[in-house]
Image (cartoon, rainbow, N blue to C red; front, side, top):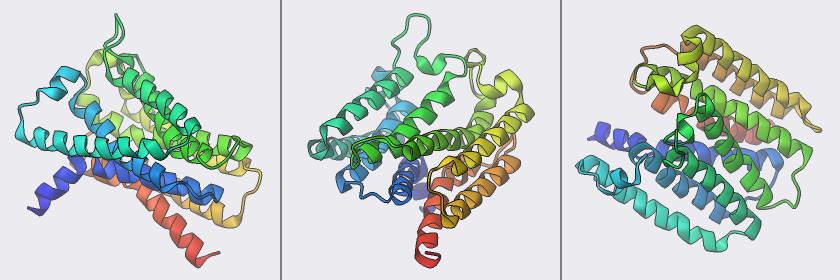
Length: 273
């Protein structure tokens, strides 16, 4: 029973939604802003419905007409989350709604067949991980920032770019895990450069992520210490990434890294400052 609940927790995208939620709070702590509770709710519940749509409904018809009971349960759960997320829209500012529309459009282009030669933008060579990283960066940095602040400062721009590289690193184990299942036509990063070079590229992205820490205008020792710990975790994760991964390596442990970042940040705020 515990295993079934845990698998549903992963398959229904609750874990990834918590990861996204935690990154939003990391942004709030980093920029020292009070993000509206309604935006937290929208991002959490919206992430569940959005990710489940992408996973189980690349084609809209397939998503509506699922026959598997397990997927039906996830479908109804996702519908409930979508309704909760939609209700939060009434409390969000106009500029946040416009930004949400842009992110939703990018997500739709990623999942839905809208192109004549390509089923969707996901099928473009190498574009898949860039879209995912851009949407995560927008949702976890830009949205909470503009919900409170009137302008995008230099620090916010750096944080957004840093978050982009952070997500790119997190996607490396998933790209390698799916290597044996992905269609050759997708030309994913591991398909193009191989396993070892993909890991090397992941190391470079992690270094870019950490280097950007020192481009902020006001950097304190606590901030550097937290980013250093996250950087070390990313490097260890890449080192541990294999072609034949254990079942929960990517789907649980890799997706838990944003939660670890959040926890480390909270502990640093409480015990260091």
